[in-house]
Image (cartoon, rainbow, N blue to C red):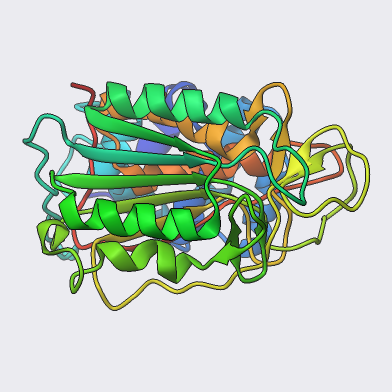
Length: 352
């Protein structure tokens, strides 16, 4: 193989790569940065480019400028299963249709969680809207509606609950943990939040550990070795990167046009495996919700599940798309979702 084989393949197929990768430029950019093919400074500079095509062109030029070895690693990255799922046009294309370099060590293919039961499992949605001492969470009904629609489409039996105190949430989750079955479990909680956890309608708090505990390996044998997903729309603090007219899901500090789901609660993934906890914002920050359209995080989650699940894209990869979409919203005020994942296998949810 020639000294510039990989470089030349990128050069010869640059138009194709531009058209294909421009569909999801932020996704390819994140994976290239995670593979350490570009520097953190390069990643930041490329992320700031607004036009999709310009972002991809500059990325390809940057990779080619780093030489043959970087080009080879980039092509190897494009061969990965998750890349072929995200960019199906790559399959069987000349840019990747040649054997991996001899010194490339084989990577063991990760198995998938089985999804054979119908329904797939239970999706519990707790939507707290009306509070004794906090603002009404306007727009949260749009989130509840969207989540119920998407997870029903994905084959889950959806159970919807509204306006629960902290004690009622604890008891509800304990009861579900005693009877739940299926190949997968999903729990979505939409509420106000503070540092210690998620608020009930009475203002009392339930910690994320208490939310998760009924479903761990010790307390719920039926879900042992099965994926358990938790999506939490609530603030994790009062900090705002820059002020914007939005409303928060935290005790009211003043007037705003969208809302924040507030709180700065600290959690860790337990030793038990097969958990994914996705939170709407990072530690110490607000989480935004439109009174008319719902929250940035939940609405983006639903859109991306609808878009990518039929393609067989795994859930953690879909959440990268959510991160990109939510973090790009807002002009002065920003929000960044975060996930903590303790999964042993690939999780793919196909519509049924």
